[in-house]
Length: 611
Ligand code: F6R
Image (cartoon, rainbow, N blue to C red):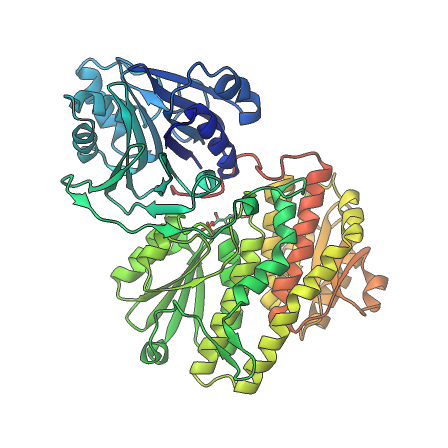
């Protein structure tokens, strides 16, 4: 999705902004641009394409040494990726520039009015109306013009505005799209997320809905967008290391993030367990004992990979807490007529904490009286500010568009939650919890064993790079693993892949089986092993090709499957965490061997902040 960065200070703005845009690449984009104020003039350069191709235009030959400017990476929604549609957008007189994330829902009506007033539009975007609207309202006071313009706007926005008559300030504002400012020394920043400014400052302030900021070199003033009154806001210190946001020697962020997973599990568990007492501590949970006892139902809402983490959690929570659990795609939940009351606990799961559908789903649940818990990665994201309680997953910044380490961290955090709730509701004994805590703590080592030798996975991946379609099958708590494995392969390799509960094979999908349709079977040790094995034998009987994910020591599987990936054995409740790793690696290597852009797959964006 689109990214914004703004800079004002003593350094050449285009250099800092280009560097920031590069760090925003992970969000997905198809064009980029930079605008600065120079000698009471606006200078703007923008083009479709990748930043590596735009380096000459935006950095090497950028025609200004100005120290104030804004930049944008655009992911096309309204209008194709063209030079005119790229941001920042200007007004008729080239006196101001606006970079915008989000969607202006009433832009057609606004544009019609502005056209009638004589404004000339050059793009097909909804965003350009903002520049003309601010131009229309401007009588010398930029802040007032922005306020007046935004009062007429419906929809979602994070905006940054510069004006030729105000070479000392950047205006920014937000509604339903993320925005923050970064506090430096003799310089200040604004950005749509923290990644682009981390190398310069760790002190940031997140804007809330309907808030704005006037950013100068030496000061940042916050104000309410409804009436412009000043606001006092706290800053937070981000402890993410800027190096963590770099590739660290790996060819792709996706691979680096897969390799970070043992550490991520340690971070997620860190300081939250007492093995001696069999206790779990989730400090930000925000649920009282009576609220936990009162809970009669749990509903999980999320999208994509986070949704599959929720599907795994359904199995864990039902087993460990003995409460009925539903897991719903947030985009479905928000548009059906869900049954939710004060005794329902709704859990929203999100890496970014900014996914539009998930946010709307939790807002709906709150309105209906439910307690809402967020299982979130991005600190101080919108979701963290709207929920009643939190479980941070502590995965650190995830840069690759395809989610890997956040999934593993979600599963780990949700396992802690299930153990904690199960213990409080006296379903689980302290002995059981103790045993599971000690098993959880050795999971990172077991994943390290997989990562130490990925050759067998690479060899199998190489064999299948020309496959047109895959089936993934699994049962029980590993049916969602199959769904997540299929999603990973689709996303990064562009090979069609579909997941089925293995028991469903006879009810239709087995008709697809021939020697061209590989079947990836999750066959690690479990109570349902024999059942899944018989599904695999049915596939073989129809000349299908099988890749089996199996536990070390399972020799029989070699006689049945064409290819076997062995991984260390763990108890079934933890198997989704470890099983996801070879599936991620398989998808990664297939895509890499095909020479694809693994970190930024086509048509995908990291953070889906519009529905
Ligand atoms: C898949 C992927 C997406 C996200 C989904 C939800 O690899 O990254 O499916 O999982 O868009 O995003 P968050 O977790 O940020 O709400």
